[in-house]
Amino acid sequence: MTQKVTTSSLPSGLHFYWYERKPNEEHRWYWGQLCGSMHRLTFIRDELESIKRISDIDLALRRLAYHMENYLIKIYELRERASKLLAAYSGYKENPGKLKGRKTREKIVRSLSAIDDKTSQSYLKLLSIIDDDIDLRNQNTHDTFLSLGFSTGYDIYDPHDALLDLEHRPKTYGDFKKRLRLDIRETVRQYDVKISEIIKFTMELLNQLEFIKQQTKNKV
Image (cartoon, rainbow, N blue to C red; front, side, top):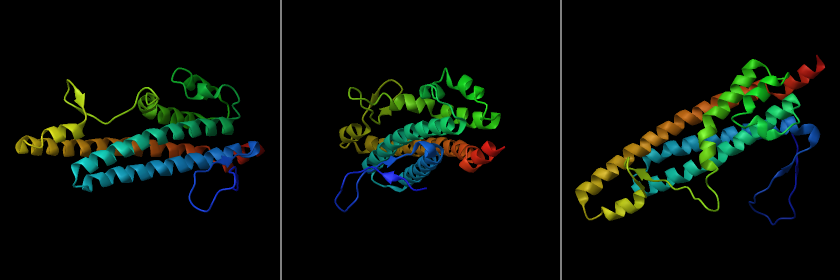
């Protein structure tokens, strides 16, 4: 699919850019964008896995925080494109926020005549998996910034600062590093499971909302 790139004249090199979608190609456009979002999540999952091989604990923590932040950005992007793809496929023209809202989406999605039960279930399951992470992402504003911290169960603090404080206590420092490595591995495992689930239901949606199927449906 060819799309016009809406950029002003730019010098040679790498730059951010965006597509100008055509109204009659919204379905194809959102299908391709959702597919791209899924592939970017796959990349993040692979990058998270690679953190386990980093020997420098400070670098491992920074990479973990970096990719966790990227994950929060990409799932927000994925949710937007999934909801817009569903709307484009079904012809839904009302308030797009109702397709995403926790209290409104199920009723709206199940009322769409062009969407069967299997597709509804895939879409609703996908959104339910990422609801809490979307809420977390939405807390990252100009007043509140997200940080990766170590929780003791009673308090939470910056693990980099803790490592600095413990440098002159070799035994405690070594024990804390081991604990952090275990926690890094467990966090990576949890994200691997969650991203794999997201990819599973995104692939189902892509298969169920494929534009060739829409064309076939419209001819019947």
